[in-house]
Length: 337
Ligand code: TRP
Image (tube, rainbow, N blue to C red):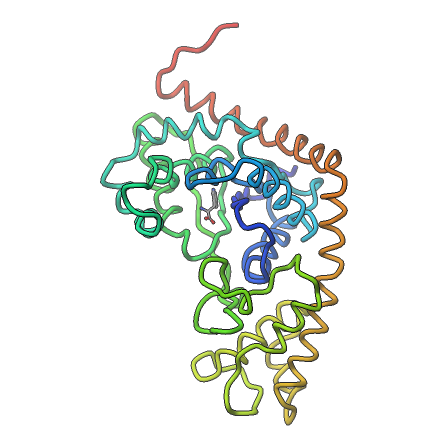
């Protein structure tokens, strides 16, 4: 892997089952692109997944499913490092050191924790959920990442990462690269098909508003055709006045690489029906091979697990070096073997 390239690291929760169009167009497409410009590390964060109650068999299946979908999306194990977080024990080890550097009040200010713990009932929230952002800090710092591709909702966790990297470096000497957030551009934001004012997301969307990539393509096509638009007929990008149509144009544009202005021109004088029919065809054409590739990986777990084992080896080589340095800096006695 070329050393002159900046490092990127991102983590993906294995809790989602099927990825949806918002995940793909918002984040995963970005991961695929970053393979060209970065020494990129992508990890399926199963340690994070157990911060809320989980079913063991489901977690195991979802971890493979997430990896299979990432590969089907175009992550190439020869051009990036894809691994399962729990396969690299250094994450938990550096996480502990970072816990001991974080203020209780500082962790208490994390808004995602406040939201999630409120949702599950504050007194049922685990300590793991509380320290979730600090484990995320370890994920990033272990790889000396320069860039962290994430959504806007993760900005506070990246700020915490920067603060803790600075704090550690200041207290113990230069050890960690201070990373920058790499927030995916607005064009990547996909909205619910039934309520185009909220983000397409597993927690907020109704089944009709969300396109699951592993659904029957026919089902997805139907969802596009029944997407909420507005009472006009004009196909024009205007997120304020025409959020539904604008969302369809964004999806169309990002799936095909056609500029929105070009699409507006192409559909001048045509109705919403034409746009929806064409977009549903575009989607079916994209989703069909994606499903096939995912099924291939899932049908051959030995190959999939082999890819993940190689990824873990590659990740571990980097992570072990960083951890050894951090352990030494905080004053742990070297283990002599
Ligand atoms: N918290 C991130 C999310 O919910 C997932 C994540 C875990 C992550 N570790 C990370 C993202 C490290 C970026 C870098 O999306």
